[in-house]
Image (tube, rainbow over all chains, first blue to last red; front, top):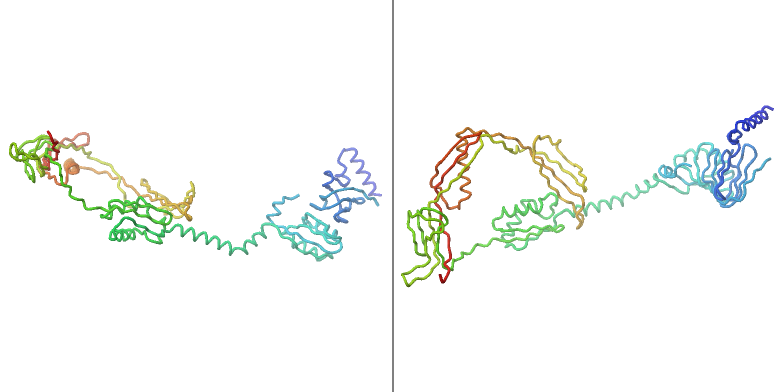
Amino acid sequence: MMRRWKSKMRNWLTNKMELPADVLMDLPRITMIGQIHIYIENHRGLLVFTDHELRLLLKQGQLLVKGEAFVIKTILPEEILLEGKIDQVVYLNE
Amino acid sequence: MKNQWLNYLSGSVRVRVHGKGVERFLNTLIRNGVYIWNVQKEEATVASFFILLSDVKKVRVLMRKSECKLYFIEKNGVPFLLKKTWRNVGILFGTLSFLMIIFLLSNVIWSIQIDGAKPETEHRLRQELKKMGIERGALQFKLDDVETIQRKLTNNIEAITWIGVEQQGTTLHFQVVEKKEPKRIEPLSPQHLVAKKKAVITHLFVEEGQPIVTVHDHVVRGQLLVSGIIGKEGQTKTVPARGKILGETWYKSTVVLPLQTTFYVLTGNYKETHYLRIGQLQIPIWWKNKNGFSSYEKETTQRHFRFLHWTLPLSYEKVVWREKEEVVRHYSVEEAFRAAKEAARKELKRKLPDDAVIKGEKVLHQTKENGKVKIEMHYQIIENIATPQPIIQGD
């Protein structure tokens, strides 16, 4: 009850104050440079990493990146820079 | 992303992680503030990545809690490079000492060659060189320069007229020209003797020829003294007239001497500074205090270092400061006159030939004005006034 109200409140604030959504709502901000780089902020940890797949935990759901020859260039608690050939970026909601 | 250069400086390690839950292990590392980069999955349960050398301890501790195994597979950066270099320090040391030895040997005199000297002169020369510190094995920059050696040798060895000194690498060449006893050159051509200057004849020493003048005769410059034409009228023949005609000549000289003179003398105190010079840069290596003399004379000697046959832009420089002292000399009037007379006499002697004799001197004039004394001297000199004049045939 309380959490839902909080979430609604945030949504409303974001809309009214024209603040970037990722700041207030802990949404991932994804920057891609063509197929070769993907930069994801606001993730919640690494779930799976192979050279053709990256699965990240988000605050809500997961993010799946598929492609080839993946290398994690940098990884920090909330940021990740992935290099390789990216084919798909998929949101998984369970 | 952090600067890769900083990582290189502090050193980094590439590690390989085996085991289940590699991703989980990575997450723990990241949450604990371990900076990792270039993560690659090699197999399903194997990942490799880079960590900082300073984080290795932290990673080890965290690894114990996980189910993974850690292998170090690559070392990068300055700390490892230093370690490697330290291991090779022997080679480095060897190379350096090799260069040092060649450098030292390049700056040593290895041979002394003497050309054009008789054995005894050569022996004498070698002794003299030894006295100057020039011998096989002497360090070049401790020796005098070539010009100084040349000057000293020419002055010290009488048997040498001229000596050429040349340095070629580590060899000193000496080219000697010895004095030869001068041969008596007989004046073969007929000649007269004539007067060099105005004089009164005092003595006649005629070896050959017909004397024209007698003692107490007054002669002028160019006047015939001894004729080279002898024999009776009609049966004359010409000979080279020889002999000495001494005559009394007169000289006047004027000397002005200030009563008070200021001049500098060296006190004998000196300070040396030794420099190593690289191009324009001067690095002092050894010195005594700072130059604290109020007035001084500076003397600089520079010796270049050599390496094999090259002259390096590196040189050793010695600067000597010699202290000067201002000395004021005061003369009383009498002293000044005496000194002026002495000076006049000295000056005269310098002008006269060695065999001339001062017969008498007279003070013509002595005045004192504006702190100066002025003295005019008159000298009577006995000297050889004869000078040869060839007789031109067919006159």
